[in-house]
Length: 259
Image (cartoon, rainbow, N blue to C red):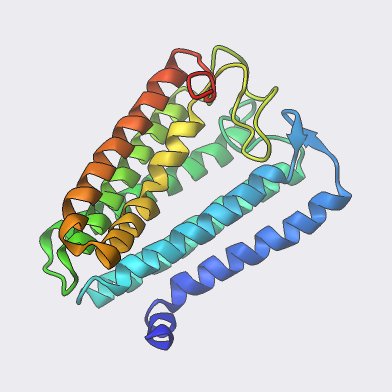
């Protein structure tokens, strides 16, 4: 079964592997280069993107593996995603190497063009994810019902996170009540002094993995409770993401209400 997965989803598996290798390379580079952008090592953002992309494309590969038929379309979408994330990675690494930001950077025509290309690539990826969600809600799958619902709701949560990301892009910044950069949590650098829209965006996007994992775990131990549990979990998860989004809009740091 594992061999078949690697054969069927070769494009996305290889894309994720290349991205993960990029993370390892940049993690080593970071040890020898202490140049900072917005108060953090310039390679941290590319590192986060490489890890996130690897997790995302591998997750989509799993979603594809359980979707019956539609083989030609899945291959075309896989190729499109490989190109999209190659563009994203080149842009993020290239801008970091130049000593400037990749996101929300419209300070000159070149930087503005790079940011616009990245934005267009992500819009296309979101549309492709929406198409995948539509297929998951319309195609009959030979899986336990709780698992199917978990996969469906994972896609819904991901699209919710994408909408929050679009709002953040429209504001050309992720900090509310302060400037981008400054004091933040380790690695993720979510602001500890102002509202940070990235928190809700991050958690919403990773609902793609959270809901199916919860469905799978509960279905293993209590199959009869799995369906209502994953539905309840997804609703609470979405409400929590919405709460964090509102908190950020009001300029409150992520940890203010939690501790």
